[in-house]
Amino acid sequence: MIRNFYKKLAAGFALFTLELIFVMVVFLACVLVFLYVSAQVVEASGPIKFDEAAFAVAADLRSDGFTRFIEFITFFASRHFMTAAGLLLIAYFLFVRRHKWYSLKVPVVALGSISLNLVLKFFFDRERPAMPLVDASGLSFPSGHSMIAASFYSLIIYLTWKHVDSKPLRNFLVALLVIFILLIGFSRIYLRVHYATDVVAGFAAGILWVIFGIGLLRRIEKYTRKEIAPVVEEE
Image (cartoon, rainbow, N blue to C red; front, side, top):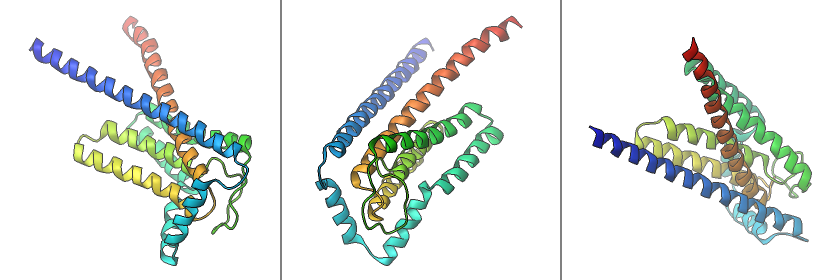
């Protein structure tokens, strides 16, 4: 019995260590990617080859049917959809699952991502590409759709990984969400409302924010529980 307990404890510790290493690697990779891409954008005196190559690929794929599909995909990171989806998710965690900390994660990730994106856009002050296929306002770097999609759907990936018990289903849903995030990013290039460098930087910043936001809230949750526990014991 004791032997089994220690085996489970060791397995749990190993899994925690692997998860922590994975998160740290992803975090550092996103920092490096964002710094590298932003440096390329700031230092560029003309078109960036990566951006031009991405536009060329998108142009080769262009058709009326595919454009309609892309417009459908890009809607799932729009302000209107994200507002509705965020409110529904908050309501679900408050009234169905009754998990107040999860209900806090949604606005922290979503609103924080939007706010950070606006600050970064103002700081880099990059104009949007010429000849867009749809109307778009505001500045270009980093892509708001890509950043919000990366943060919001990465939060869904986190929740899926934590709470879906079936490993095949969990892996399938995670893969599907990753593909969906990438499609949203590509949709911004296809529609010529963002450069590829905008999208890559948006992905990096969005993932950085969701890691920071979840980590911060988990620390606050643990601290709050420790503060409440002595009070409960005294009563």
